[in-house]
View 1 (cartoon, rainbow, N blue to C red):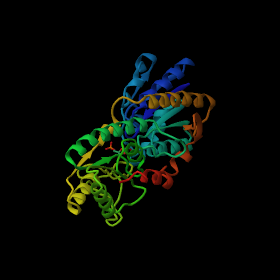
View 2: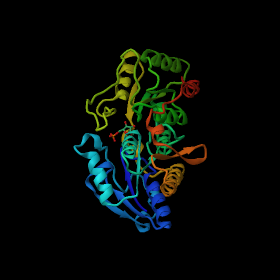
View 3: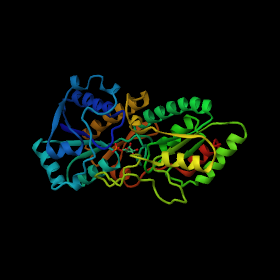
Length: 345
Ligand code: F6P
C-alpha cells in the first residue's frame, strides 16, 4: 500500500512516536510511507518526504513533529479540497492518515465522505477530543504544569503572594484541572463553569486569615467570569478554523491578577505558561500511546477501516467512527470538577 501521513493543528508531544509507529509497522509489510509537510498545506501543495526506518529512528523521544504542522483549513482555500484529491490520485495513495484535533479530523472525515480513504489519529494536548479516553500530549502537558506549580509554591510562600497561573485550554479545562490538581493549586478555574471573581477573592482571604498566607490560582485561558460574561480576548484574531486566539497579549491570567489585587490587599502576581506546555520531550505515557496509535492506524489501513479513527478505550486501542470524534468536544464533567473543588482554599 502507499500510505500518506500528515500532522495538523497545534503540535503535541507524541506526534513523532505516531509517525515512527506508522513507519515501522508499515515498512514491516513493505508499504510505502509518504509524509506530507505542514498538515493539509502539504497535501494541497503536494509537498512531501519519504519516510523510512532511518528517518524515524529514535524520533519518539522528540517533541513536536518532524512533518511540521499548520492550521491550514482546506475549506478556506480556493480549490483546497480538489487540490488534496489531485495530490491523492497523483501520488497514487491507498490511504491517508491524518493526525490532529477536531479541526484536522473534521477535514479528514469530510474527505473520507468524498471518496478518499482516510484514517484519523487523535492528537491534542487539550485532551478535549471525544471518542478516545486520552489524547497524547496531554500527559506531557500536565506534567509540565504540575512541575511549574510545584516551583511556584515555594516562591509564592516565601513572599506571601497569590500567583495566578494561566494554563492552555480554550474550550475545555482538562490541562488546568489535572495540572492544577497534581500541582496543588488552591483554586482551579475552567471554561466549563463560569466563576465569580468575588468568590475567588473570598476563598483567598479566608485562606490567608487562617494562616496559609500564599496561594496558587490555576486558570484555563478560556475560563470566564460570570459577571463579565465574556471571554477575555485581547486579540480579535482568529485562526483558519475560526478559533479566537486566547492567551495572546493580555489574557485571563493577568486580568484576574489585577482584579484580585484590586479587590483584596493581597500581593498578587501572574504567570502565563504558554507554549512551553506544548513543547519538549513526551512522557513515557505519550510515547507509548502515540506508538500504539500509529501501529493501529496501519492495521486499520490494511483492514480497509476507512472513515475511522484509532482511539484509546480503557487499555485497548480500537477503531471508532471519525464522526464520533468530531461531533462534539469532550469537556470536563461536573462531578470531575466537583472532586477538585473539595481541595479549594
Ligand atoms: O489546541 C491546542 C492549543 O494548545 C490550545 O490549548 C491553545 O489555545 C492553542 O492551541 C494555541 O494555539 P496556537 O499555537 O495557534 O497559538
